[in-house]
Amino acid sequence: MSWNFQEIQETIEKEASQVANLKDLETFRIKYLGRKGLVQEIFASLSSLPHMERPLVGKSVNTLRSNITTIVEDKKKAIRDRCAGIAAPLEELDVTIPGVTMGVGHQHVLTQTIDAICSIFEGLGFVVQEGPEIETEFNNFTALNIPVDHPSRDSFDTFYIDSPDPQRKGRYQLMRSHTSPAQIRVMQNNAPPLAVVVPGRVYRPDSVDASHSFMFHQIEGLLVDVDIRFSDLKGLLTVFCQRFFGKKIKMRFRPHFFPFTEPSAEVDISCYICGGNGWVAPSSSVLSSMNTSLTGEPQGCSVCRRKGWLEIMGCGMVHPRVFTAAGYPKGKYVGLAFGLGVERIAMLKYGINDIRIFFENDVRFLEQF
Image 1 (cartoon, rainbow, N blue to C red):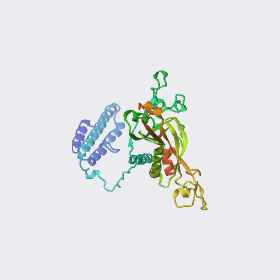
Image 2 (image 1 turned 120 degrees about the horizontal axis):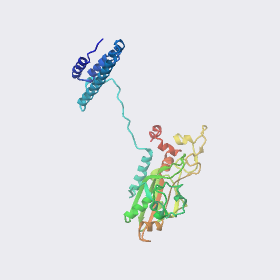
Image 3 (image 1 turned 135 degrees about the vertical axis):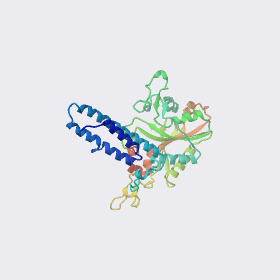
Image 4 (image 1 turned 90 degrees about the horizontal axis):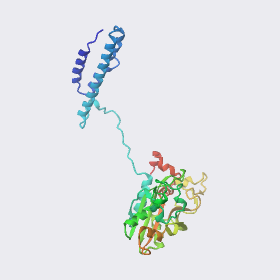
């Protein structure tokens, strides 16, 4: 059988010009490129041709197949371009196909916690500020009265971006290990009175486990004026704790040490699950039932581990050396500062026992909040 490829090509081009929609185009494609189409028929006939003709016919049919493929792609693009922006032709629309419901997202539980905390302090007159995650050694350590030999300045406890160089006098950069450097930046750019809270991510080279992560979130608070007392700090944090955890919450201060505050304290609240007594009585609530035996006997509270108290943050009065580093006149201003870990607050509030689950993006967990 002999094939007139020029005549075939002309017929193909004529038929292609009459194709007006995707359905006709698919019929055209099957006619020429399908398993029983013309191109396959020509390939099948090669074995019956004389040996001298096979190379020429083979080359011609390959060219023909390539030309048809190009025609099909060009027509498809032209039809789709023509239909763009207008209703799809009926032959392209199958009204029997079930619709696809788009999932509606919501804020991550950590974002919700940050917003809730900041909202409380905004209601108390604080302004939300942000600080860079890449900090200088001066802002992260020196200006906060953290001495050169302090363990936190070691490379095992801080992600340094630049190699330490004594000649640069503490100017190399690092990933901030806490949000406290924002205190220095705020005070350098603003004169008192000022009241700010600074949420953000912080970084420490900790091994990841149920209670530690190399990246987590903190919220720093700073209030500076000429007449600030330690009682103001306790009153402020009492209001915050009662608004966030409930009015029945009790709070206590424990003496502590932070280089950038003096005096310093750790803040504890009475456990909001067991009421501060360390034991959970039989109840219908989910958290209570988790701490109650099958016989209905009270069990030790798993949230506070029968201690009755939960540690939630550190605080204190701003150290005078911090004011000096920020450029404030000596002895003119007084301030209070506090800092809390967002993950810890969320874990305590919602009874979550593993920090890693915040960052695994497991939808089954995230959809609960």
